[in-house]
Length: 382
Ligand code: 3HC
Image (tube, rainbow, N blue to C red; front, top):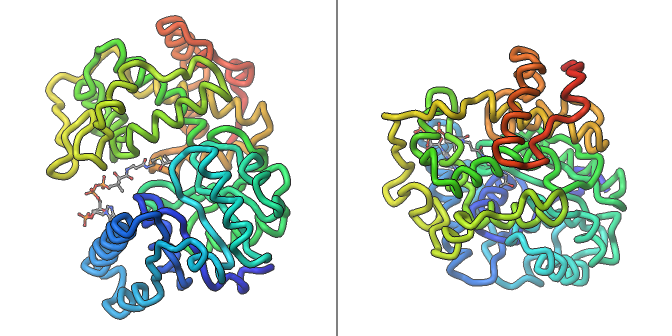
C-alpha cells in the first residue's frame, strides 16, 4: 500500500481531537467520515469544524470554495459499519480506555477492508496491546495528534510491536500530506515522546495542587510572559479527565509515583474538567481564562520545569524509544510550541538542571524526579 491508495479516512470520535483530525484530513484533500456514537456528538463535531474552517477563511488561509469543498467531502455519521466499510485509513480518537479501544479495533478489523491501516490517536497506551485485538497487527499503528490538531504540527507515528514498515511509511506520508511534522517513535512505550517528556511536569503540577500552594494563578503568573499557554491553563485546555486517565496509566506502567492525587480526582469527580465543561482550575465560560498575574510564585521557575523535561527525555534515549535526541526536540517544539529540551539544556547547563531535579526529588519525595546517569554526564548534542 502507498500514499496514493489512501483516498478515504474514517475518524472514530468527534470530540476535540476527532473533529480536529477530521478537519486536517479534509484540508489535505481526503474524503473523511467522522463517526461518533450519538448524533449529538457528531453534530457538535461538525459545528467545531465549520467554526474552525470559517476562522481560517476569515484570515485568508482558505478560500470560500475550499471551505465548501472540505465540507462536501465530510461524511458525519453514527453507523460504524458504514463509516469504515470503504476506508483506507481509520484513525480512532475515542476516550482513553484500553478495553474500549480494543473493542473498537476488534470491530473495525471485521468491518473494514483488508488493506486498511488501523491507527490509534491514543495519548499514552500500548499500540501493541491494542493491535492484539485484531487479526492484522502489522497494519495497526499509533498516529498521535496534538490539540488543537488543526494548528499544532506534530504527529507521532508509533511503531507497535508488529507494525510493518509499510504501514508506518504510509501513515508517515499521510501525516506529511496533512502538512504535519511526523516523528517516528521506534519503540512502543507509555506516553511515546511528547506526553512522556511532559509526564513529570504534569505530576509536579498535580503535587502542587494537592499541597494547595502556590495557587494555579500564582504559579502560571510566573510563566505568562513566555508561554502561549501557561502550565495549569494547559491542563484545563487538554481536559482534567484526560490528565487523570494519563496519570492512572503512567502509575501502572511507569511508576507508582504517578498515582493520581486527591485534588485531581476531586476535580474530575465534580465534573469540573476544564475548557470542555466551562470550568476547571479556571473559568472558561467566556473563552480563555484571564490569569491573575499580580503575585507570581518565586518558589518555582521555568528551570524546574525544563529540568524535569530534559531528565525524562534522557530516559527515552536510555530506553531506546528514540535514537536521535533531535527527534525529541522536534517533537516537543512542534507538539505545543516552544523549544526542544536538549536545545534549552545547552544554554542552561546540565549541572544546574541536575541540581533542580535533585531539589524537586527531595522536596516531593519522588524517585521519578531524580536525575539520570545521562543527565549527570550532560553530554547530549543536538
Ligand atoms: N482552528 C482555527 N483557528 C484556531 C483554532 C482552531 N481550532 N484554535 C485557535 N485558533 C486561532 C484563534 O482564533 C486565534 O486567531 P487570531 O489570532 O486571529 O485571534 C489564533 O489561533 C491564536 O489563538 P488565541 O488568540 O486563542 O491564542 P494563542 O496564540 O495562545 O493560540 C493555541 C492558541 C494555538 C491553543 C496556543 O495557545 C497553543 O499552542 N497552546 C499550547 C497547546 C498545547 O500545548 N497543546 C498540546 C497539548 S498536549 C496534547 O494535545 C496531547 C494529548 O495526547 C493530550
